Image (cartoon, rainbow, N blue to C red; front, top):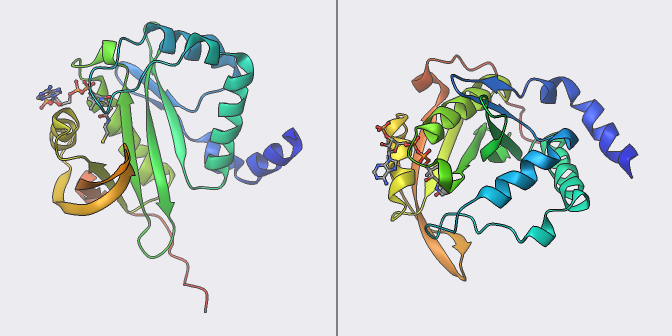
Amino acid sequence: MYGVYSFIAVKNFSFMKKIYRKTKRLIIRPLTILDFNRWKNSHLLMGEQKNKWDRKPKESSFLTKSNFKKILKSQLKMRASDKFYDLSIFDQRTNEIIGFVAIMDVNRGLGQSAYIGYFINNNYWGFGYGKEAVYALIDIAFRDLKLHRIEAGIEPTNRRSIMLARSIGLRKEGLKKRAVFLRNKWNDLVIYSATCEEFDIPWKGKVSPRPQ
Ligand SMILES: CC(C)(COP(=O)(O)OP(=O)(O)OC[C@H]1O[C@@H](n2cnc3c(N)ncnc32)[C@H](O)[C@@H]1OP(=O)(O)O)[C@@H](O)C(=O)NCCC(=O)NCCS
C-alpha cells in the first residue's frame, strides 16, 4: 500500500520538498506523521463553531492515529497529483497548529491557475495570522508551484474572509453565480484574485500545448 504513495512521492519529490515557508510568526508546511499530537490538540482546543464558515470541532473519537494516517495519505496523494495542496499553519512560538491553507483545483492548462482556501482556528482570529499565512500561501503558489493566477471564491456574506482578501490586495473580479454546492444548495461566490505580476513575482512556469 505505502509503495504506491512512495512512488508518487518520489516522482514529484523535488517539487514537494520546497513547500515550506517561515514568516514572522508562523511556519507553513504539509503535515507529517510527527504532527499527530499537534493535529489532535488543535482540534481539542478549537472553540465552538462561530459562524457557518467556521469548522465544527471533530469528535474526540475521530482523533485517532489511524484517521490521522488516512488524512496524511490522502493529502500526499493530492499533492503528488499536483491537484490540491493542503498545508498546515504552525505557531513558531508554541509549535501548535493554528489553522490551514490550501491551493485547490490546480489548472495546468492555458490558465495556470488555482483557487486558494484558508482557515484559522477560531481561538486565533483577529491577530493577523490569516493575513500572514495567506501572503505565504500566495508566494508558494506563484514561486514554488509556478502558477500565474490565484483566485479566492468567497460567499458574499463572509465578511471576515472578504476583509482578509482585500487587506492582502486581491482584486474583486465579480460574482460567480451558483458556483458551489454547499449546505444543500447552490451558492454564489465573489471572486477575489491576483496574477503573479501584481505581487511582483515573475512568471516562471510553462504552458503545455493542448493535446491535439
Ligand atoms: C477568514 C479568516 C481566515 C480570517 O482570519 P484572521 O486571522 O482572523 O484574519 P486577520 O486577523 O489576518 O485579519 C485579516 C484582515 O481582515 C480584517 N478583519 C478580520 N476580521 C474582521 C471582522 N470581523 N470585521 C472586519 N474586518 C475584519 C482585519 O482587520 C485584517 O485587515 P487589516 O490588516 O486591514 O486590518 C478566519 O476568520 C476564518 O478562518 N474563518 C472561517 C473560515 C473561512 O471563512 N475561510 C474562508 C472561506 S472563503
